[in-house]
Amino acid sequence: MVTKEVLVKNSTGLHARPATLLVKKASSFKSDISIEFNGKKANVKSLIGVLSLGVTKDANIKVIASGDDETLAAEEIVKLIEGLDE
Image 1 (cartoon, rainbow, N blue to C red):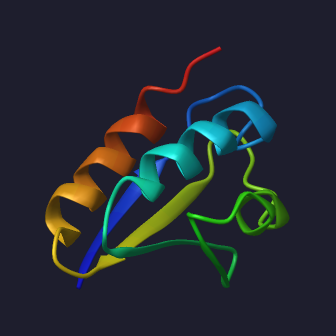
Image 2 (cartoon, one colour):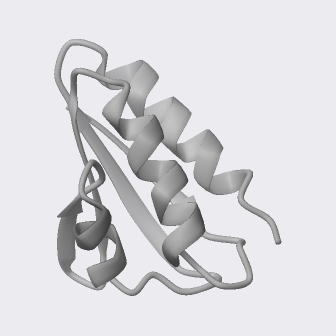
């Protein structure tokens, strides 16, 4: 299991468009990938799950990946979140 912390810099947090990008990216990996925010956890492969967390700008979230390609999956998801700028 790989755990990484990341700061959400996107002005609108993880709303519909960035959440959709996240889900698409996460779905390309075999590993189970989830994010944790304010004590709640959601599967990154579920759009409703990601949106239900209500992640806002400047939020610190935890990316957790577990499986065959967990290291690459965690790195790519963190890279995508860090690159979300509007």
